[in-house]
Image (cartoon, rainbow over all chains, first blue to last red; front, top):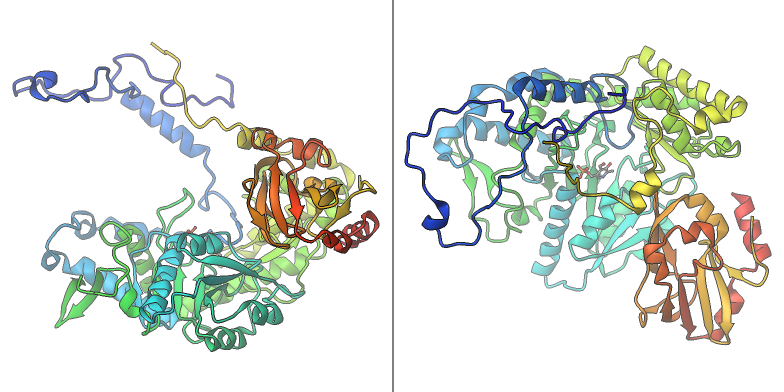
Length: 489
Length: 128
Ligand SMILES: Cc1ncc(COP(=O)(O)O)c(C=O)c1O
C-alpha cells in the first residue's frame, strides 16, 4: 500500500470475518415475513464492514494518527477559539454520577446533574450580565436563531408585527444573516467604516420603526472592539429594536466588560469555544442564550429552576418559544464548561482574556512588518492580515495557508471576514507560549520570503503532507456525495 | 485586465450591455471573476421577477467565498442564462460572452447614463 493510501473500513471488509462471537440463540427463531404483514422486512443483509477487532483498532488508530488537533500543534483558526481543552474536564465528564444517569429519570433522582446545570446558568448570567440563561441550544447558530425567535415573539406579543428587519454588519459571521432569515426576518446589511467598526451614519440610515433587532459581535470579526456600542444601543433602542450579542468572541472580554452592561437584550455564548468544549471534530457544541428580564418569559422550555432547595425542570412557561432541543442541551459539553469555570474561577477567567488579547497583539505587531495589516489599531483576541502584497507576486492567501501545513501548523481562517481582501484571520488563544507564537511567526516570515524568491514552492504547497494539494474546485463543482462499494468478497 | 469599451460597469463589479433601448444584459467583470477564483455555483432569479437598483438578484459562489450579485438597474428580468447552472466555470472562462447572467427590461431607460464607463470603472479597481 502506498504511503498516502488509506482504505475505508468498507474496503478492509472480508466476508464473514467478525469481531464478536455471540452465544447460540436460546429463543425460538421466527419468520419475520410470516409474523408481520409488511413489505418492509429486509431481503438482503445490511452492508456492514466485516473486520476483526484488531483490524478495527489499526484502522481507527491509524486514522487518529493522521489527525491534527490542538493537542498536536498550534491551531490559530480565527473566530473558532481553538484553545486547549483541559483534561480535568474529561475526568469530571466521566464521573459515574454523570455517565450513569438518563434524562428520562425522575428529576428527584438526578438532583446533582440539575444542580450542575443550574450553577452553570448562574455563572453564565454573572459573566454576561444577563437576567436569565437557557442551556438548551446545541451551538452558536442555534442560539442565534432561538434568541431571534424570542425577539420575534416579544414584538408580536406587543402587536408589532411590522418589525421584519434584522440589521447585520457586513463583517458579520455568515450564521448571523442566515439565522435572521431562518427566523423569518429580512437581513439588512450595515457597512463598516475605515476603522473596521460599524459605520454609525449608515446604522442611522438603515434603522427604522421596522427594525426588530441589530446583531452585533463585540469584539467584531476583525478582532476590534466596537467602541461606539453605547451610541449604537441608543439608536436601536430608540426605535424600539432589540440588541443581540453574538458571543462567539467572548474570550476577549471576560471579567472586563459584559454584554448586559453594554445594553444588549440577548446573547449567545459558544461554550465549545470560550469555555473549552472540544470542537475540533465539528461538535457537539453548546450555545446557551442569555436574555434581559423583558425577554425571559420567551426562553425555550423547560428551564431549570430551584424551589426550596430542590431543582426542577419548569415546563409551565406559557410565552415560551417551546422546546428547541431533545432533553436538555448537550449535557456533556455543558459539564465541561462548568468544570472549566470552576477550575479557573473569576480571576482566572479575567486572566484568560488578558492573555488572549496580549498574545494576539504580540503576533500582530510582529507580523505587520511583513504582511499588510488593513486595520492598524490594537486588536482584541484576534486580528486579520491581508495577503495583498504577496498576491502581487502571484502568491495567494490560499497558497500561504497550504504552505503553513508543511511547517506543521494549522492555517488561520482565510477569506473571512469578507471585507478584507485575501484575508487571514489569526487567533492564537491564551494558552500558547511565546516560543510557540514565535515559531509560527517565523514560519510566516519564511513563507513571505519564499513568495518573493521562489513563489512556486508556495503555489504548489503542501509538499510534506500525506495528501498534497486537493482539487477543491472539482470537489465543489462535481461533488461525489455517496460512496459506492466495489465487491470485495 | 479586459474591459470592453462598449459596456458599462458598476462599482460592485457588474458589466451592463445595451441590447435595445430598454433592455440590458448583465454579468460580472473579468476583474470580479479573477478576484473570486474558481466559480462553483451561480444562483440566479426567475424570469419575470422584478429587481430594484442596488438590490441583490442572486449570488456567485467560488471555492473561497460567496458573493452577492447587485442589480445595477430597476426593471423586470426577461431572460436568465440557464447554462450557468450546470457550467459555472463559464464565468471564469468567458465572463463577457457566454457567462452573461440576466437580461433586464428597464423601467427607466435613462438609468443607463448613471452607469460607469470602462475608464471610470478602471480607475476604481486600480485604486484598490
Ligand atoms: C462570530 C461567530 N458567530 C457565530 C458562530 C456560530 O457558532 P456555531 O459554529 O457554534 O454554530 C461562529 C462560529 O464559528 C462565529 O465565529
